Length: 297
Image (cartoon, rainbow, N blue to C red):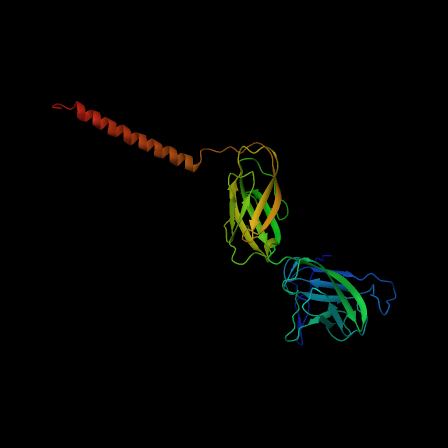
């Protein structure tokens, strides 16, 4: 379960409070009340927080917290087959219901490297009693995490969730944000039946709108023109990223009459070059005729 708020980073006597590096995930244990010595307590909630975005990859660090602990508690141990080693939580301060995750030298508070994607249980215990459980959802290493992939009119601010409807033949801006961009990947490719050819989106593009909603992610942006003969309807738009290993699909709505356009710059340049070539050929032909008809020839 996601939460809209996350804790701030606080260091206290060598202990680090759960940092605000991503939304919290977790669940309260299902149990009868009052708590049994061998069963979980309904009053305690176990959450985990990830470095960025909302997913965990093999090898990722993570932070746990517990809420609803009774007064006088002293230590909670988190165990899971997905973890490199158990993780210990202690009160933020004496009598506090907030927890901190101890970070002793040499400890590894992370998902096991090479772990297969899947859902793994995590359990919070204290002095042999189960307090709460949750599930760790682990995705494959190197997975994309696209937080935004939208298309809209080139002269309008792109949306953050859904692409705007566009007319055939219109100029559009494309924005894609990856919270887990592949190292060294400066561009991604977008293809769709609405384009004559695949469109390349790049980092540092002037089409990047600079939206706060993209904070923490790598932004790829670019522009293109839709085909003017596209019938009204919904079309698939596919981004190929992570050096060709990841595909992300969205839908684009095309509606309305085609946007009228004058001749393209390429067409104008081609026509001008053709006219110049024809004029040059005419001059040459006139000179040849003039030489043949000159007196004495």
